[in-house]
Length: 451
Image 1 (spheres, rainbow, N blue to C red):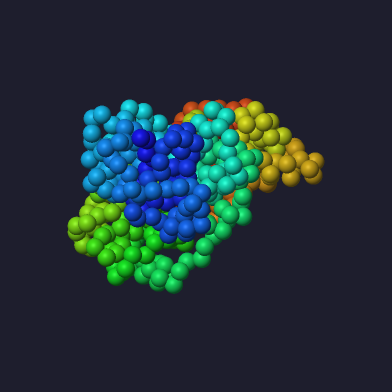
Image 2: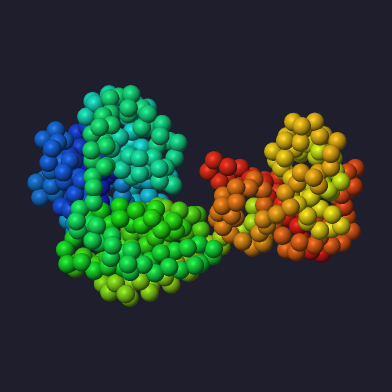
């Protein structure tokens, strides 16, 4: 007998992964954990007869010879299941998008892909094997992917996830059903918990990242702490958010991260949980909320990686022009080097910046012979080389500028390292021809250093 199962507190991606796995293992039984996420309970109440699920109590474990684990490597919901997985004669197949961790079960078949949803991995196999899907099946699978990727908006989402969703839509996936399960308003209890978490929030600045740790204690279980955690991340515009909530006899720890320096999965693994770099969770039976918060902050400090700074993303050498450079010459240099602007240096001092927009404006009025000094911006916004990239991005956006000098000292001292026919001479350490993505913007960076 083959069985397909997943982790406790089963979410929609886990449910969809089980459905997808059954298409690959058609004789396998869907064995559901005792604890399900509310949206999964609601879905099964409508479609349980169609999916034909069962519980561990309803099967003869002695007849099981293969277990297909999806969306997890450590289900942790039944001692009987653990005992079954530890039997040497049991064949284990694992499909998961969570990185492996110490203590995971090992499988005779292990399929791991760093994508937004485990459902994506399984659907791709269904697609390759040309297994037909009904419209309902396609809808369930799409629901799983949309759930775990935040409707394809979470940082862990890949083009692979999007292409699989496109395939499912072509198979008849119903977006109205998907929307109905993903657009549920917060309950009164969830709203109260959200307010408590925001009120208790502690902010920490580490390695250029703003990190929020929020705590709460409630008497009964409140679903979708992960949803509330992600909502806090959006509200507070932090690089990472960790929520610690005591419910009944358990403490639930959820982490969300927007930056590569903070690997939520790595941090949460320390507490016996797991997940992705951007999203992870754990259930803890010991400790108090306050004790756990202290331990969590200590682990974050230990695990956080140095933040990228302006110095890390700049390149060299710097190309500059002087105030006496003509508009025509400056335009030619921009075209030659592919830059959208140049720093303007006079007597080894940064005096301004001129952009391609400035050049085009001067040329429009037939002033190609004019000097750069008449068109350059003299109110120069600059940043130090150790400023985190996230803050550099914020400065560019706030001031609506296309380039920002990275300056140690506004006076550029020493002999000329590079000379142009335009007459510029400076001891300049680097030039940012490398681009820094800021969503819809692409920015040039420059650096000037004092000798």
